[in-house]
Image 1 (spheres, protein in one colour):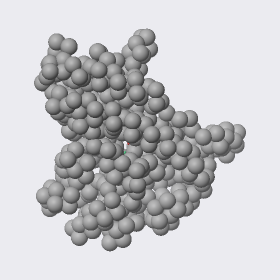
Image 2: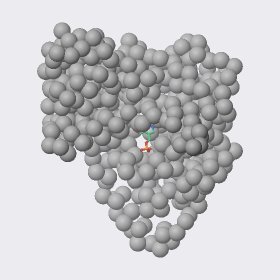
Image 3: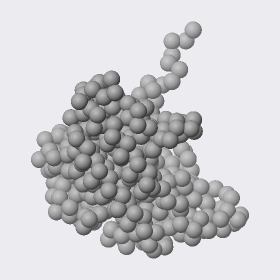
Image 4: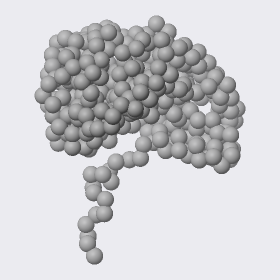
Length: 402
Ligand SMILES: Cc1ncc(COP(=O)(O)O)c(C=O)c1O
């Protein structure tokens, strides 16, 4: 019998997406008739706006879209993405520096695959979104965590970044607004961090997918625009998923210097080729239209955000800083770990989340998924009534802990 591994070492090392796993378990319980309320989802609960769907329907009827198109994206979409980027973040990039990808996720993979050689270090602010570590690892890179907590609203300082920098550091990953914490860096903080990165010759990979979801006076700042000193060592990641409620359409993009975009396009040409033309035409309608749909979603998210944060902070042992962006709250639940609850004594936030799912039929994602045990991530992209009911159930259960 062969002693070779059935699944390669590289791919065996990839973990299941913890957020999708929680979501799947909650959906399975729901399908079995249990009234589960899920705070796990990372997607808006709104439908894609009609004018975007109509553009897709029209595209599906056009024979030229039944064929292969350029691997790097439809030229008209690349143009529109360049124009949208100029409009929304003031960043000037020619359409030739845009690569249209299968969702923001593929842009994340391709950015790290293109920039990293084995052993290159990437500074990642924790809590971080679950996909980054896997993308960095697959590219042979080494993730160096810069751990933040609720006391700073999950914002990293230049001092912390500098303490984590070594001769091998190549990339700083900058994510604002952040998934999972909702933290948003101010313009001043963004400029300070960007200048520090430029001073040390680092590349900055900036994930701007939540750019339009900020609240309570917080404003998105594109580090690429705010820090011209970064020169051409910036790669912007973005997509239509969160802004236009288009998670299922799978359109994202990467904007970078010509050599990086060309190399990443070569990679994509062998991996997946062009993104579905129908989805690209839907994305074209989205990015060339106005921002009224996201303004309406933002209003609903803001209302839910305030309700959720207030209710969470009323629970003894739960501490939730105010998230300023995206659609997640990230409360600390450290004080509840090890306490007795319904005859059990959960020893970690993962165990506590499991108990909550079983006893209160509420799904939350434990902080283990984001590199910081002792926390939960709750999405507030769900209906107001469900939100109140879910957090009330959580409060009722957790108040029993002693
Ligand atoms: C921070 C962040 N970046 C990128 C993505 C990728 O989104 P998609 O692949 O659906 O475009 C997500 C989705 O959850 C995200 O939270």
